[in-house]
Length: 396
Ligand SMILES: Cc1ncc(COP(=O)(O)O)c(C=O)c1O
Image 1: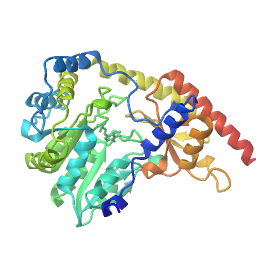
Image 2 (image 1 turned 60 degrees about the vertical axis):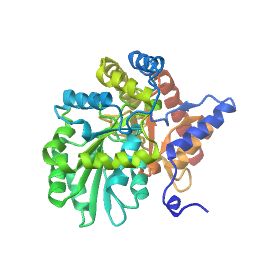
Image 3 (image 1 turned 60 degrees about the horizontal axis):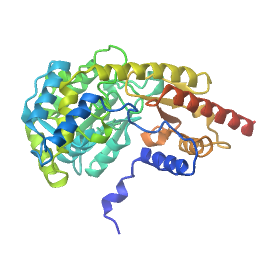
Image 4 (image 1 turned 30 degrees about the vertical axis):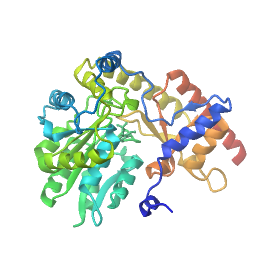
């Protein structure tokens, strides 16, 4: 009944947790949600004010399909300040979140017969978007024992004559790992030689905890100017997930292709959101630092609490706001067999929402988001530990 392409993709696994949680809440249970990939903070006041002014000023009509000139300039200015790289307006298009930025890019660049390499554990939408573009998904694997670092060699080893693109997410969802500037430079140099596109998902670029070098835009500008794409987003940096604003920065032909796609799909991003994002990017950046400091404190606490049980292992993440827990020692053929089953039972029996590692192509793990208050995080960890102790009794 449905089109053939629908048999190739699965719907977002994190959404499943949300639905289960909603059902339990309706039944009156106190659910702690560590499944959501979104900041628990409100959008900063000056950003909200800009949106109110946009409404009152009747800035409520279509804008240019690729976004207002004001916003594109604000994006260029932000990257100039943060990374010292110069982009021009025709190299930027405003999208409905980083998700649309990546989706447009995949459709504009990849198609049947192309291989596109990306990494696991990784964000499932990247896998599905490659498949939607009818390209061949090629997955390389980052290992927990190496801190989930993204090593250039693993990408280079996966290159074949059919490779058309490499998609890298740093900081990564779900591991929080970063790619090293030099490793990206090695990949970019190989890509330049072989005519391969490198797409960088920088959705979590503002959420890096230690002052490590992460000037990836400058690396791509230097090594692969004509074949690199950056996808960015206001969602996580400015607690603006619901506003839906992201951007693609790419050579002008790619931006024009993304614009053509978008002009027949969604058209411009909401005019009010665009005004709000100008305020977010151009206004004070202190709210970003405050949120980052708060996340860092939570990361350290939850990591300490959860790894108190030596059977749960976790690489402390350098960025984003997730802990990716190795629970493989808790799984067994006679007890709970998979991490998805673990996550399902945790929702139904302890009312804690997490996401099974299978969603990120990493069985044996669960992802917990610490974008929640410390009090609720403590409650969740207590419940997880009680759940694990109950499992022990059953399997003894
Ligand atoms: C790795 C990664 N990239 C991109 C996105 C897109 O987010 P948005 O569309 O809200 O900008 C997300 C959201 O969870 C993500 O985790």
